[in-house]
Structure formats: structure tokens, C-alpha cells
Length: 121
Image 1 (cartoon, rainbow, N blue to C red):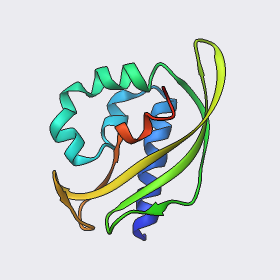
Image 2: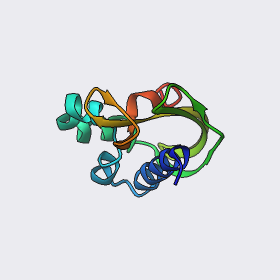
Image 3: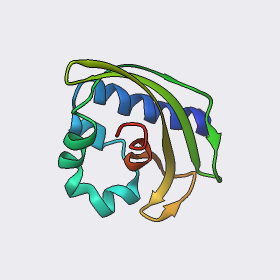
């Protein structure tokens, strides 16, 4: 499987876990560096920024490659917050790392969750 598809698959898995309100599963798809720095805060972060939104559906567009081991995927998401339907354009950065602070294509793909916040606030 090519790198772009692995990155897309990681994003799809994260979005499905979000739709199911499974913050523990969402956490498995996070960028290694982000987890190393913030992993213990993930349940609160997820509850505050992601799980308050009831994810309904999404459409992922063609990504932009940023460096060797990084893609930015534009998305349109439909969700409800407080019972009100909403639709937003956001983007998600997916990064491949061999370890924290070690970008490389032999590692695992993960989402930087902060990259998705601009469109959610």
C-alpha cells in the first residue's frame, strides 16, 4: 500500500472512532510526537474538542504532500453540536514517524489532532 493510502486509512480510522465516540480508539491513531508530549491529556482533549461534536459523515479530498512523511487532507465534515446540524471545512495533518520527533516512512502514520481544530471552534 502506498504512503498516501496508509495516511488516508489512518484518517478514516480516526474519523470512524470519532463517530463512535471512542476516544481510546481515536488515541491509537495519534501522531507519536503528539502522544509523547500530550498523551496523558488525550481523554480531556478529546472530550473538549471532538466528542462534544456528534460526527455524522465526512468527505476526504485529495491531500497535499508536505515533506516526505507528511500529508494534509482537506475534509468536509457534518456533525451536530447541541442538537444543531453543522457542516465545516477542516484539514488534518497526518505524519509518519519512526519515533517521537523522528519523521520517517518506515514508522507509523498518525494524526496531529491540533491540526483539525481550526474548523471546529
